[in-house]
Image (cartoon, rainbow, N blue to C red):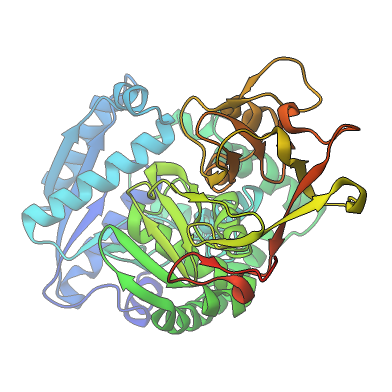
Length: 471
């Protein structure tokens, strides 16, 4: 057993001579086996050892378990460090599960202790059964290939020297070496998803579907790890070419290059950007797809707000990720009838045509009004606070904000919708509705017809206006 673990440590370069290794020890069977194994290997591999214990304060026996580990270390000359936290109170304050709060607190304490002592590695007692459970847990949660890798032997400072062993191997080692340990009854509670997988799902799979399910899941983890590594190398290569700006608070990607990649690489690059700006926890598949969907939006100045206060904005051929909200789109352009108008803020061009009633034949998608019912000079402008109008087909007047909400127009798209208005009246919301104050009816003499135009063919960026050529 010792030879097998030593070989695994060397194969994965988990421990180097002269290093100080902190061992996370709860007092349970796995961690006590790990502590005993590393203490036995210490002379031959030439490293130093310290044990760390976090007392969660969740169970009456927590103090006894801390004292048990302390006394074990004292009897064997192993440096011992401990910390007590009220994990229940912490979980309530941070609105996390006890399991999540406990795990984060353990690793945070171990990292702080490593920094204080100058340790280079933190060893935990995860084994092959834990790895299989993790793979299945991630599969149930809908994880991608990265989650199917399971538990890695080396992850930053964290090492898992026992991943070459099964739970049965560890139990045999404890018996042969007469190693005492504590039993945490909460490990048998089915209140936790991992425990239900361990005590219910995996035994069912083993009995009715695959007697070697543990081996199969560990094999899946190894395959996924290798394939994920290959994809990560390609992702990094693509990412270096696509990143136009890489700062602590803002990352800019080239949308043209990103849009040409396979969706699998798009997702990985986007995920890396989100992780870099706001950490790895809390993101899900939906967040990634929202950003990918933004790539397909036509025009520019498209934006969305994600979790954690992160904003993403598409500006022409750039995808801008940042913690500051994008600038609000604001524009107002006077209309010449007949004529054409290009609005750079939304990258759209419009044509305005004045037709006699008898010459007008409406087509699907046309936006038209009674020109003689409009009072004042016309503008195409962005919406403003307090804007309202009289929607055709509805009674009374309505705030434009409420109109958008009723139609479920995404917040980030509302600023992009031009309003046809004079100084005091909104006569239409482009693409949605006109005001009944300017509806075309039997008494109409002249019709104002508005159409969108191919932007690249009609825009004049120097003035925002190009002559249409109509008399």
